Length: 88
View 1 (cartoon, one colour):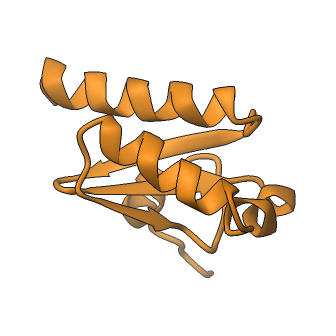
View 2: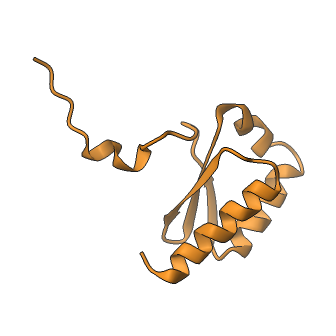
View 3: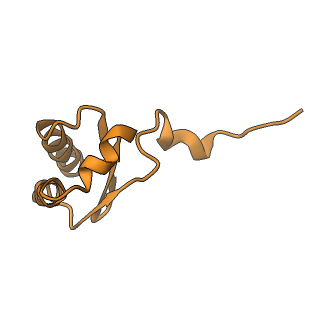
């Protein structure tokens, strides 16, 4: 993680909050910003006008592409692949 990438994520998350997406997170995947939103905000994010503004704001933060994670925001999602489930 470097300061430039952190600044991109911070700017994109700030834009989401300014648009009223309080429960949100942006993941940095190179040129792609992966947006996680609460389940109630997914439909609003792709509604006319909002989608265009969201893309404009997030690409202005320095990303080339904007992806909406349809699973929504998940606490600890970054570490999920590291968790091993054992069944006894």
